[in-house]
Image (cartoon, rainbow, N blue to C red):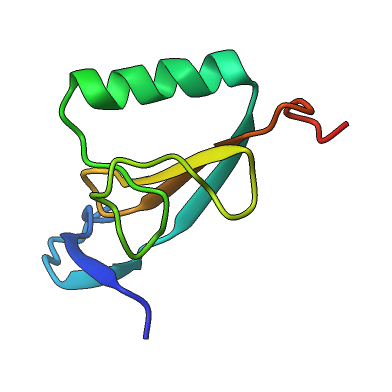
Length: 94
């Protein structure tokens, strides 16, 4: 079963319902160039945001990724999992 976070739905016109709904957590992956990857890594480090090389180990502070030259995972404050990867062959895979 997917992880989910409760949130309060915004009332629709005329509605005052405050029923909690569930929002599915998602995994979002980006392939970037090396400069962008380094900027993202530096930003995570400077803000003390935990990251890791595996989706099940977000605190190992490593960037050795199984599918790319370098890559990392981190969780956004809303719970979504972000993955950033780079390769020496370029962001478009060529």
